[in-house]
Image (cartoon, rainbow, N blue to C red; front, side):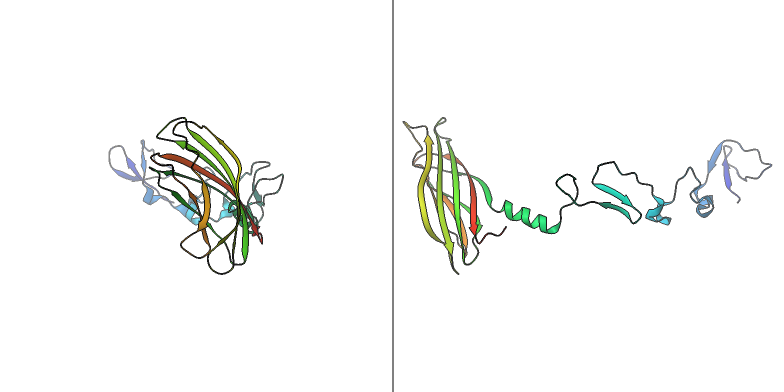
Length: 221
């Protein structure tokens, strides 16, 4: 194999066993990839090699495994981290759908309406909602309220089937109290949709945080 060599003088020459070479540069065009193969410090030309040419070391106890078939990620178990199956992911998503956390603000007495979810046909649900409110207009006035609602649906809109007005009510009373902020559940614009309505406090701007747990029957999980 002859390699063209650029000398420091700018002249080109050929390398052979009798040639004394000054420091210079080997031209990329003169390198024979096939002849070099994997011999250049154990390297390889990536586009010409298969995955079998790559050496991979898997960390002991890690999620990645290396077998004769290649690199893979093992399935997760109670004691081993790894991938989640499609059925497990679906179950996790369904569990996530059973809880909600929403924030909003009622301004100058206007109600705050927050869409929550859609109730499937021939389904009922129990909704346990916590409302934490803080007055923006009058700092230091707070309200914490907890309520239960029941809703059901056949084919059209949802229907409220029961309400326990308040499980608990903690608040800062006195002048400019925001105790009148209350919750109710109602049908949304589309069949099956339901939403929470927080009543506003006259002349007051209030920040609200709603958190809830929904128990469906039949259960989707």
